[in-house]
Length: 261
Image (cartoon, rainbow, N blue to C red; front, side, top):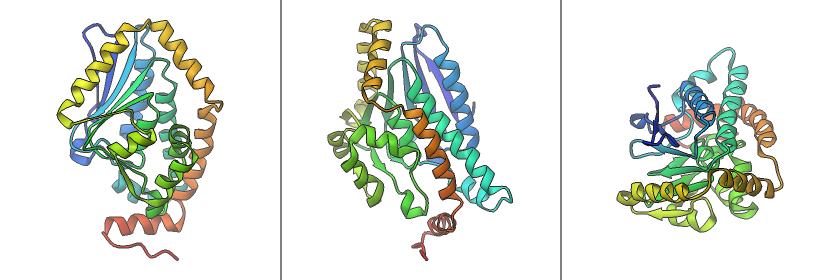
């Protein structure tokens, strides 16, 4: 898997999925999402799994969807069906992370943008470097963060979610921690130590008790997330096919202000 690496600890109980497309800001392509979906299914089936970690190489955790691939899709004669399959694929990946029965941890070393937020918010715990920022710029690009929205609302609440979704502004790591996106903020050089500390803590927990605790905690939210993600995929696909999406993407690539009609 060229854009994704799967590592296990010595006892083969903790898996780490690392995005390795750092030279492209770990922007998510179709192939990368397929790799993630397959890796998540494989890892989740391991009987001894006690924890899943998601990390990334390079200075950016994830810049969202690959805009070059999106531009190519926009000119494809089958663009509408591609938008739908792409949105469903991304929703399946987010849902797969959310549905892992053991504790999941995101180690965020740098900026998280757009679709990258779904990978982070689907995790149970988020550790962030002070170099991390969190941004949902979709409306400024003529599209929507439909699939991320239910995850964000569950994590930070209705009011705070609206600010991030509508303003186009970024939250730095400390602001994100205050609002519940991440749970621990460390200097960049201390992030690996923080990850190891969480791993050590999870080792002290009884495996079945941790699974039951996670299931009860998720049930206490009162809303089943996967159906929300399925509906959101349809909304996301519809937004990508709109004329505003084509103008927003073109403007971003040309580094100019979009001309909204």
